[in-house]
Amino acid sequence: MTYTRSEENCLKAIFTITEQGEHGGSTTAIAAQLRTKASSVTEMVKRLSEKGLVDHKPYHGVLLTEPGNRIATRVIRRHRLWETFLVNHLNFRWDEVHDLAEQLEHIDSDELHDRLDKFMDHPKFDPHGDPIPDKDGRMIDMAGALPLAEVPKDTLVHIVGVKDSSPAFLKLLDGLGLKLGTQLTVNRRFEYDNSVEVSSRFRNGLLLNEQVSRNLTVKPL
Amino acid sequence: MTYTRSEENCLKAIFTITEQGEHGGSTTAIAAQLRTKASSVTEMVKRLSEKGLVDHKPYHGVLLTEPGNRIATRVIRRHRLWETFLVNHLNFRWDEVHDLAEQLEHIDSDELHDRLDKFMDHPKFDPHGDPIPDKDGRMIDMAGALPLAEVPKDTLVHIVGVKDSSPAFLKLLDGLGLKLGTQLTVNRRFEYDNSVEVSSRFRNGLLLNEQVSRNLTVKPL
DNA sequence: GATATAATTTAGCTATACCTAAATATGGGT
DNA sequence: ACCCATATTTAGGTATAGCTAAATTATATC
Image 1 (cartoon, rainbow over the protein chains, first blue to last red):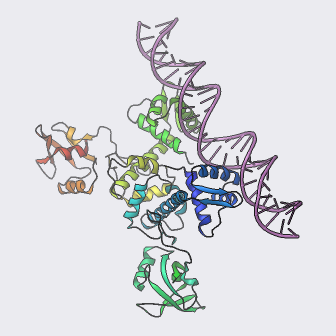
Image 2: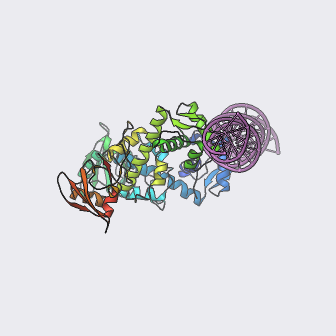
Image 3: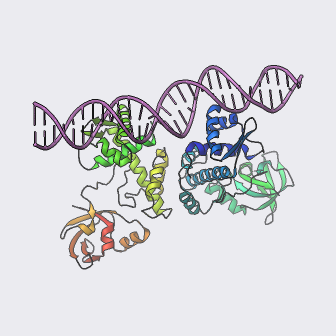
């Protein structure tokens, strides 16, 4: 089965809206997300519902069914793979790639995206630090994740992503012995320049400046 | 200005049909190329004509105007760039990439395609041996080009393309001292196995088997 | 120069995907 | 239990992009 661009975009919007929080997305909210009108969403949702991709309880929101969720996740995967490719291989900046990825995500081919994934060595995060679903739709759980800059003192966290995936930043992290999965404890925070002092298993009292701590996404353990 | 997928496809079809031969493409021929119906082409051509992209003289064919030609060439450039990327970087076979490139060629961004071009080091030919237009629409003139396998004896030619751009084939050519622009003379052709003996400025009596001579595109000088 | 054959266009229909404006239905607060 | 502000749907319209079938038109042949 293959879906139109509008159908894919609608499913993606519902996914995004319902991601956090258990209640469905209202047609109004979906319309806002898609920069379209509620009446247009009504028609779209009706068709998606007939295809068994969403469950719609008027006034209680739209929810994705399992097949609907699979398709939405696939679109998100494609979007994030393309963003990663554009930034890491074509040297776009991370803030330039969204609209292009919005176009590329609708290219109809699993084979293409799986090969692109492989070409990039199965990246786990896109340039914005968002997790990339694998071909089965599984991705690193970001619930509760936040920038290291916002972690309270004496909290054990582990690194789950980076907001900046420039070679320069990744080289810096490498030099500090920090990578995905590294466990850290925040020892102190300095109000003066918003720097944080952290300790890892391998290194104590590592001082990280604000820029670094903002671009490291971590999750409490 | 931005054009719809159908408009771009129609312009591309007209380009392809009118490429060799000076008379315009009939609506019937365009319809066949697009796997659509003549009546649909009539409407499409009417709109393209209103936008100044084509010149239509009924019963005498449709011709591209200069702006129309620019857009058609751009679509061809994009198509061939993507085919090259898919084969050389994502390891697709050259016979698998057409339909994917048909989709990718409509991604609306000059910047993307210029960067893709740069990423691949400005390739001059796609995996099928067709020339890739540069960003100004210029490309190597293929009029009169043919496979080395079909060149008559004692003819001076130069290499203008390769049909197979696999690393293995390119490595072989490199090893034989053959590259784009190399001038060759065909000395002999052996009916036994369809091999050809050629001479270049640097090497005499080089025997090339049928597979190699079929995959080398040359042009008489 | 008439005319038949083939190319072309017109007319009218379908589907997607939007829109605005009007009508309708409902859940939460009183 | 009622009501109204708000969410939702319906009705009717637009544009793109196809289709079939019928009507028209021009070229080339006789």
